[in-house]
Image (cartoon, rainbow, N blue to C red; front, side, top):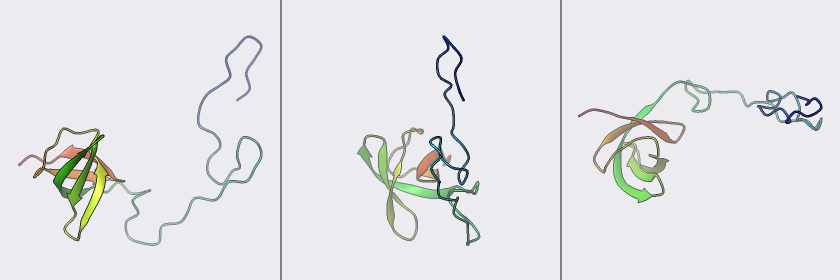
Length: 96
């Protein structure tokens, strides 16, 4: 990722996790998943119901086992709507 004379520095992702940082420092390895589903490495989305909108693209949702705060910045949803949430981000509104 070096730049030649007169060129802008290259911009992009650094080394993969566990391969060390750009300055040569060690980075922690990516944690292993020990359950059937891991939010950080699966393609699963969970249907939840919006309880109330909080502003700044956030909402409180009912997960069926309690309430959680998630981002709804990528969808247009209202209280009562069911949305699919992946990694704390609503990614789709489920048609009623």
